[in-house]
Image (cartoon, rainbow, N blue to C red):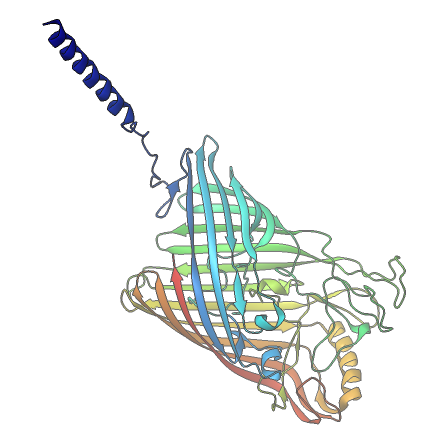
Length: 499
């Protein structure tokens, strides 16, 4: 009996031991996974960063485009770089990435935003010149904005009133590439706000100076660098530099409501030039012109809820400047120093249009500020959820005063004489008119196919003929050149996937 009892107890103990071993082998229940949660505070696409109360949105687009008779982004060949060298068609592939982080605090929303645009364009494969650039990188806190963002002078649509593909629509400002600034915005309610700020002087808001003493070249305009030019003796001296000693002071008043938007902008812009003695390494400033302050004003208007259809709108801007041409001749890249030589390499027609904030005359050293007037606008119509069309255009008028015109005329005549015989009249004033149309098809959300045609006319006030005995520029040989107004047709095809 005792043997049977021992056997039963032993078996039970063994079973308990085995059961304990099996229990020890069972997996331990994992902690709950903290999944990414949707953040609905700031619109679609935001998610909470795990473990924080910060909301992040990552977005952007991938773009492929083909451009005809223009540079990329449908940039008319205003300096004829592409047409002169036979590169009439250009392509570009770009990816844009945006990072938008926002956190609600007792001070309001703290925001950090960055935008990067890596791209590869025609010719980059030969120069290894692919571009990785930051257009925007700024922080917003308690009404302040610090970093690189659109200027307080800029309009919400920049230079795209007609959903245009071209980034070179003139007649108004364009800060889609950003500018370093500090600004503060007051929100008064009911859509009314005011912003003041200071912008760093750069290619975003200046176009340079002409020193008439340095001379001009007939077909390539003038030597106009922001940090200096090569002297007549060949030494690398800053005989005419455009140094931004002061920041631009900018601001706007804006009313943004359901019916549309109206904005008044203003800017004060310092025009400053430095000299060094010609052909020497002297660090001493010689005969430096006194600084001058220019200005620019602008009115922007948007009208929504048009009877033509849902989503249709009209955008319009008009501006005036003295000594700050960039504010009415904005573009994604540096505004050209001189416009001319439209057409192919066999063209003997030419329009001259020097572009400068001011002129240092042959007699005296007081900077003569350049005046400019510009306007642009567009009408956008949505046929249905998949198709849209827009018509847009611009007009720009540039005027040099009598002192500046006389000095430039003397310098230009001397340059023309070196090439041959000029018969006609010289006047640096000019007008630029543009009109374009773009149509877009969006078969599925986020994917858009677009086509654009753009006409640009440069009406230079210099009229006449130049019988050139030597080739004035690469790709153009001796011959008789007709100087006056010029026309160019350009176009762009684009496929873009937003995400």
